[in-house]
Each structure stands twice: as structure tokens, then as C-alpha cells.
Length: 207
Image (cartoon, rainbow, N blue to C red; front, side):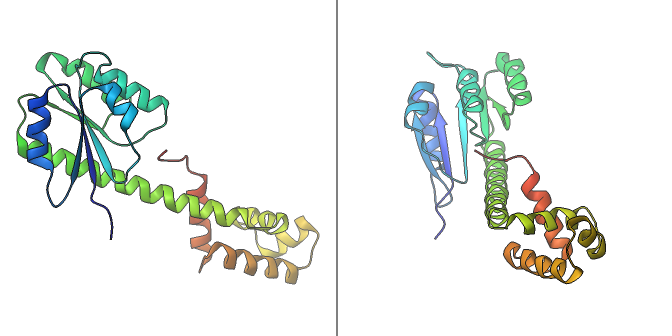
């Protein structure tokens, strides 16, 4: 059974934390609350899918500083800032640095839940891509040096005869290597093989 998505609420205002727990903690989500940015960084645990509701102004570490720390640590969990009207410019800058979205106080509950739903969906998609890329990388690591060389030439669009000439081996040996590559990579077609290698070459989407 898949775990419920986790919403991390980071806000020094107890009333705000309580209201968000009341609004969000239901059959769809589990909510964890933190009284400060420092508290969140100390107690946070990786969970997928998830999102972080982060007050932009707090005593001690501000929400912006918490977000910057997450970016430095390679954490890609979507961050939704809760801001006052005067903090919108800061929130916009945070969006440019990778935050998912922001919402102004007093916020519309339906709008907030819509943002959270999109953030959770985004996090699940990113995690899925990351898991798939890890699996492909593991399969690539199981190829022998010769199989990897054949794979690189196949992905480059080279025909068997050309590969045989380049590697100074017979066409039958190329075919045998290709068959082994397809088997180890779990690819049913050349198109699937090429797509797998391209996905593996993409930068990691989530830390």
C-alpha cells in the first residue's frame, strides 16, 4: 500500500499551523508541523511524494534561508511559500531559484489545496523519473565493455556492418552483442533502447 503524501508545514504561528492541519490532514494527506526553519531542517525526513508549506517570514531562519539551504542540499521537494502582501517580491525571487509556488495571506483554501495537489503530483512524477533513471543506470553498469561499445555505436545510428568494421569483429559477433545488450537493458525494440539511454543521460531530477 502506497503511503499517503506528506505535507510539511513550517510556520512559527501556532494558529496557522493548527488551521493548516485542520484543513489538510485527512484521508489523502498526512501533515507534519514545525515551529521554525531550524526545527524543520533538524527533524525533516525524506518522503515521497511530499511538499513543503513554508512561511516566508519567521524568527531565526527565514523561509527564504530555509529554501536556500534545501537547494544547497539538493532537496527537490516542492516548496510553496506563504507570504504577506509585502513579501511577494521575495517570493517571486524564490520561484526563480526553484520554489514551486507561493500564496498570499489571507489565502483562499481552495486555491491552496489546488497548489498542493499540483505540487504533490509534480513530486511524484519527478520521483518516478528518478527511479526509472536509476534502474537504467544499473542496467548499463551490467554491460561488459564490449557490449557498451556496441550500444554506443547502435545509439549513434550505426549499422551492424559499420559497427563490425569499427570494432574489427564479425557481423555475427555484433549481432550477438546487440542481442545481449537488448536483453540486459530490457528493451523490446531499438527505439526503446535509444530512449532508455537518453533518459539515463538526463541530469538527476531529484535528490
